[in-house]
Image 1 (cartoon, helix red, strand yellow):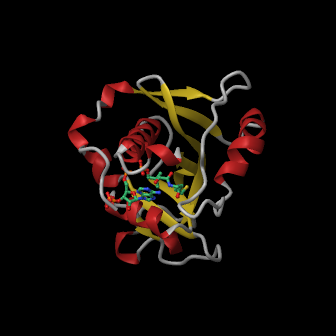
Image 2 (cartoon, rainbow, N blue to C red):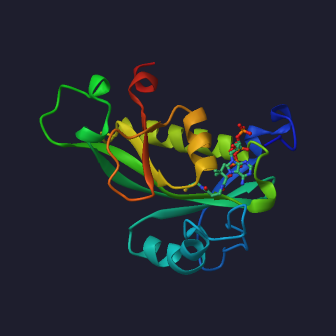
Length: 184
Ligand SMILES: CC(C)(COP(=O)(O)OP(=O)(O)OC[C@H]1O[C@@H](n2cnc3c(N)ncnc32)[C@H](O)[C@@H]1OP(=O)(O)O)[C@@H](O)C(=O)NCCC(=O)NCCS
């Protein structure tokens, strides 16, 4: 897929992330390229995001670029089972089966704004947030589930890996190990 605008034109300072509220809920088109809500991103944003947030089950941020809403991302804390991490890269310093992580529960750039590198900037913001959290509360990984092959390609390009074992049917578990970034 060709880019609609070169990377250099995106101004990283023009992004803003505002918590979803009942008074601040823009219209976003979260359907896939076939016009389907195959990952239930639209349904989640329209019907459940606010309720989940009120129940402290996931914090949803409206992403704006130059004050225009371009998407949303929902984050929460989670874990990853050590069996899901490639054996050679597994930490050997902890006995438990679960390692701490932040989860990208849902992430969508409005259909009209995809392919312009906005997603890349937002993902870097998520990675940075996880690193900030991990300095106060242990958080070694970022995890997410997706079944969209384009999204798998997008995350792979940004160093996310498909987990060693996947038990969620067609949804693939992907993860990023923050270790080397945290050591810098
Ligand atoms: C995946 C997604 C968040 C990426 O955001 P984005 O702003 O389009 O991403 P970027 O412009 O930084 O990168 C585009 C890359 O994502 C991929 N991509 C995935 N879906 C795409 C779409 N519908 N349109 C354009 N690119 C898409 C392309 O492969 C492209 O790769 P390339 O750089 O090799 O051409 C966004 O495309 C999206 O919202 N997709 C639908 C919802 C989804 O699958 N969310 C992820 C699972 S929670």
